[in-house]
Image (tube, rainbow, N blue to C red; front, side, top):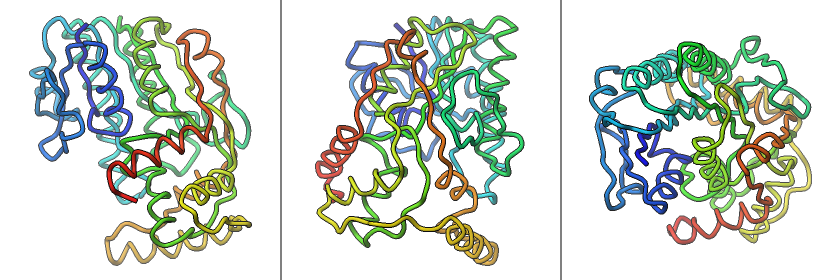
Length: 324
């Protein structure tokens, strides 16, 4: 099978490429000039320089006879200063990718979205939950929802596409998400504990779901890729225990996080440096949104790992990388 991968040097993308390589797929990776290719420099993988915002570079890069495009390229920015660039990557980038898939007659298109495409809900959601993303002042959520609409419009034009919505992803090759919490706690101690709650999924289970979506996902449908639901204090306590650090007892009040983020945002407007905490991040950290994944389990044979395993796997990877 021939796969074309965007976002292949990101967290989920790296794990997907490793899995595809293990299964003997022919893989072409679209990458920017600045991308770090070291984690995916595996035998037989082809690399094509380009950018999802540049249609000509995409058309040039996609090999003839490609069976599937795994479209993982996205900006996960949570700072309003970068909203314009994020919208270009997530929306224009997706439009370019679906147009290229149609033009090159690619057999199937797997679009990696996010649980935040549904917006923010203080409840358990499923694939039928209406999105409130466009009512939020949160560009990441808005653009993930809008990019899904771009894919669904392309389905009406004949694109064979499936949309995946991972929740909070944990595992190896994470360079900026939950690994940041490991590193902060290890080096400086726990800075504070947000009140939120979320569903958590293991990155290798998510990678496997991408391949299953190619094989058995239903055209035009969404699949939430969740897992065990835990409060953030439960997750942070488990990380503290793995690192032999003092276990936090209390959550930080929501209003303090909002005040801190607001002050940080004001300072950043002057310094142009990214805030330590943004108002958008507070929205995520104080939400209590979990999800059901029965549809993915039924259609994609999606596996759900427990949180202890996810965190232990991440911890072992960090040690192997000599980061802790």
